[in-house]
Length: 274
Image (cartoon, rainbow, N blue to C red):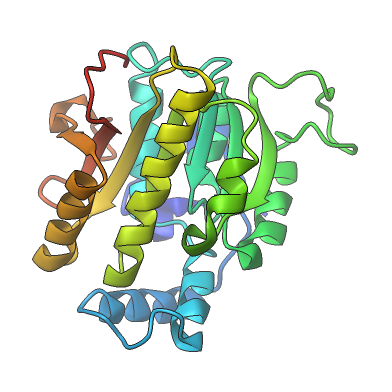
């Protein structure tokens, strides 16, 4: 059941064939090579521009299928969090991952001590829940973690459709310290609802606790200049500011100069939190 990212990210792991965070391997559900090829071809095609109605069945199915794969950005962001664990302390922090897919970023955060909520479209939730249990990170019956042991585990796996986000946001009982997202900008029509979701959660976290300065880390792979321009414009329109993480601060083995960037996103106010 252990899925190595070696087939996706061309890195020689030598005697350690599994992707590891804090010394622990992350186990994932296998995706067939044919399925991966199909999804990558679709992702490349949809990045070229809008493909009709944003609510079309084809686009919904594509969004669902991409949730089955570990994309490079998730590995880059997971390793960045591990590499910067002193500057970005996650122990006992409340972390939300958007578009979790296989959940590798959120699982990495849990292995670094965070209390993590994973989210994705409803289609992805059963597989995502299975991955959490496979990694023994869920405080639910059947795992070895006690229900009260919430530091360093996945506390919730919940559906979150960015186009229908109000119910999720209104149900929040406490603020998040960090929002994480990786490779979630691959079709133009998803950019605005994604940024709106980030902005709404940042705002709601501030309302719940004005002393909490939530920070979002968005790991992004450039696929088109137009897509990047739309992303930056939407961040500005939603009152968000972003900083590009210094390339040299990324884990040396897991970085792709000129292709993958990490953006630190906050509300457009003075914020000196990590």
